[in-house]
Image 1 (tube, rainbow, N blue to C red):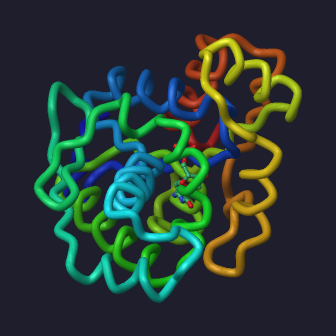
Image 2 (spheres, rainbow, N blue to C red):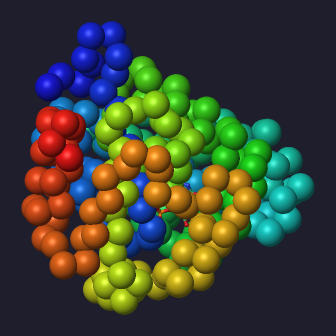
Length: 220
Ligand code: DC
């Protein structure tokens, strides 16, 4: 299977709650298929970092949107991974997973204007080259027409434990609540998505299920 099938780019949408393992799985699937891996959460995180670094209150939607319209996003690629620069500043993983970003990102991502802008960036990027993109609304909003949609889940206990093991301070339950209950593109299982519960599965097993479904959609 080639990244571009005919003239349509191959787009694989992987959604799920925080710490469900979707990022690790998406990265591996992208490497297997020769596609670029994009974490849409990193784009929301990058903007949340910009908001906090400019000392804008993340819960003040008017101030956040005022900053948004003055901000440039540049999405690129390095060694198969999507990269993002905000306001000319290339983001590193350390910045993107800082505690103040974890605390601000769900509020920033709930603002419709922020979503509209980042969804447009995500569509443009994916359609240019083919991608494995993971997030909360990739199969439901960003690429609703792709036949390759997955929803990776895991129990809240397993997800909290994964974040603790990574040494990351993150309030999973609180973010779940905000991400699932917001009115703009809440986290949902997209229509037609294959749901995989990773609580009791290894990463290899989840990756194998996703690859099998991409290669042989009829056997789902
Ligand atoms: O996947 P992540 O935990 O890095 O995502 C960070 C936050 O960004 C998450 O709490 C909700 C938001 N997000 C979103 O609203 N829509 C997406 N497609 C991806 C992430």
